[in-house]
Length: 300
Ligand code: ADP
Ligand code: MG
Image 1 (cartoon, helix red, strand yellow):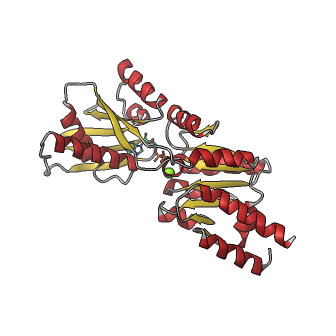
Image 2 (image 1 turned 180 degrees about the vertical axis):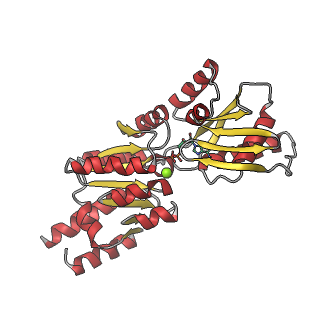
Image 3 (image 1 turned 135 degrees about the horizontal axis):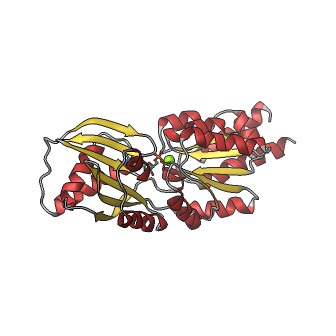
């Protein structure tokens, strides 16, 4: 496209809250055949909440929540925020004053798995099955059953272990954005395939995929893995767009032909992207592609 056409299109995009950084994204967006969506915070609202809890040992729920909340206190993860909010609510409900002298020691983040910390003299793990297996925490059949049931309901199961014993679990739900399904089916009508990629487990990812109308799901994928999936598709000659919000997504946003960041996402993702969806509305994925189509057809 000519510099003038690019200027007109980026101006038009900006007025719709679609920031297009430069002509390259604009030149490529109309050729997109596949859109890869991150799950958490992109297809979903990104504000997960605890909907259900289960206790598997003699430690009562209130105490278990307190231990989990202290272990997660320094975590930036949305799931940690859900655990903290739930614990706060529970304590208010029962008029419990949490022990503010409790502080996490030896706090450690295990990417794609969870966190660990010492709380008082107890070792607390909060995270998924992978974290428990890596720490040799046995998973009883009743726990396995709860995890499966939770995941098939499109929820993420957060497990809590205390001193090497699995003591409880949270079911955490993060609803789909209201426009998500409409956008996926609209893209499909444009012969564009939608794919989901996530660090979450396969059962939860598939259940969310069913709700939103995405059949191809890459689960348990780390940031490098997300970028690799994109390169595989590009090797087949496909032009690929990636839509994401997290630090996790930045290598994929760079690898994609057109990286689109959710405006409400992290600064790292916004910097890595070619296009920023300022309204954080997935409809603007279509707006960006349309803008590119119109710009390039006009100059031809
Ligand atoms: P994504 O944001 O794409 O879902 P992440 O890599 O951030 O993926 O996390 C993958 C999984 O690791 C989560 O679904 C969860 O099971 C577990 N996890 C990561 N961080 C935490 C945490 N702070 N607390 C509990 N679980 C966590
Ligand atoms: Mg995300």
